[in-house]
Image 1 (tube, one colour):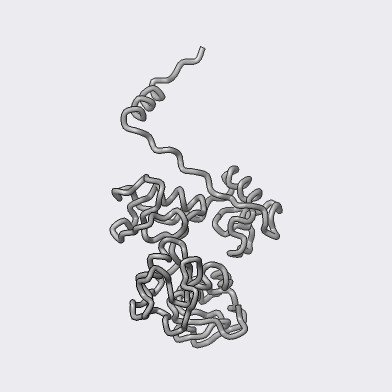
Image 2 (tube, rainbow, N blue to C red; image 1 turned 90 degrees about the vertical axis):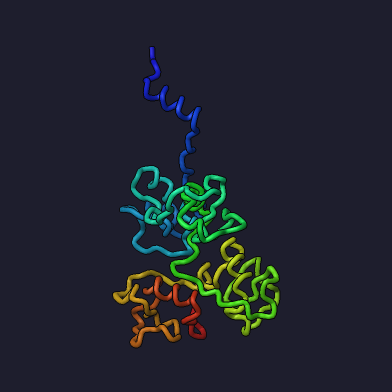
Length: 258
């Protein structure tokens, strides 16, 4: 005959009296639409571990479900979101099913975001991040500019650096960096993204020896913050620097590049 151990009785009583957090939800593995799916390696760059593919592409996010699920369940890979510091649950809006931390964006975000809730809604944000419903806003800050546009604060983003369902139907280049309030709100809600950060531009990886030095070394780009010497071997090899500077408007793609 089996008996409940006192430990489990005490835990049950504690949960009844004080409540217990539900276990974190499993990651959203997506589907098998990747060219490299079902080859025994995980090609989804959201993960890390011994059984990851040697080359990872942003386009394979959520696209190698069978491999990644099997390896994740075996403990051979983990979500690379582990190093993300989610903070704690000190926000008054913590554990309400929405992420209130303004460092994130996506469909799981709360409609109103306050800077005081940074690092303060860990459980919600971690669960939604692992489900793929939110992501970190960017590897680097986005410069929204000011509200000098004649169309600012009308509920639509008029800055042509962005794309998404929250954009105005007509965009003009003079509104770059000029509709900050609208664009920031829609960006934090996940209704717009910076052109390039959502996949239009393949930034590659950080395999260049000059990566993460604050300058872009990829010769596909041009602008004030490019490295003084550019080598063709660094194409697609300085992702962090180039994406951050691109999102800040400090560099642009050269004509004909993608």
